[in-house]
Image (cartoon, rainbow, N blue to C red; front, side, top):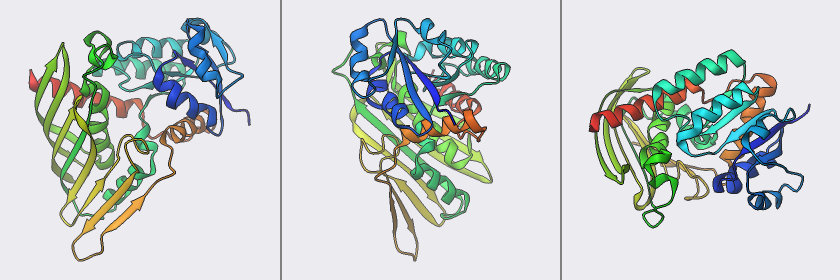
Length: 325
């Protein structure tokens, strides 16, 4: 079977270091083209993909009939625009998170996806990692009893990089759009619960949130629990998620940047039973994401993170901002 031919819009550092490499290495995928107006930015991509074709504009890449799917790592504020353009050009599309800046924008993406009959998805790689798939299965199986509390922490410090798009309001920056999407969406996905109420405290610099702390009352799939989350772009790096049930606890040590922040580990503690640790040193969530996307495109396999899933997280993000206003 022919592989899915991919094009990448823009020579973003993240694409160069992670996603373009994942596309190049993934089974069932072929990295075919890159769009950039600066040909010198294509050279690091050609270092690992020598046959890469380079288009001088995004529109030229979308017009290439050999491209089946497009990966979009552009700044947050233009994700919706180029996702819609890719769908209109007849391409399947995988867009970096957050795929939109408001919940109602995702309704338009869902309509365009359905009208085109193509796959459009947010690049939410963590659901393709076995540590999260395992945590979700354990919770669903009642391994730690009904969930009563969960907390997530995700922080890093980029104060020394004021030009970074995450530090600029005009490009959709802030810790919540950048990493809150992980802190909030991961717990939703693992538990099947949605926020019933939210309180939040947000600290801003130059119009973007650099610290956000929330408390949410979550309910769904027969459980109701309290959820605490903290995200920041001004604190020492930290990543951790904990699910606490009536009979046990699950802790993920590198839940978001597995393999980069640290080794992905799942720790489970239950009264009267030995502590349980599972490690996932070889899992590659970006490659897994590309391969899952290609299976859906080729075979119609279910895709684990739909636009409807992304809409639920964006609704929670909108609720966090509204609760702090």
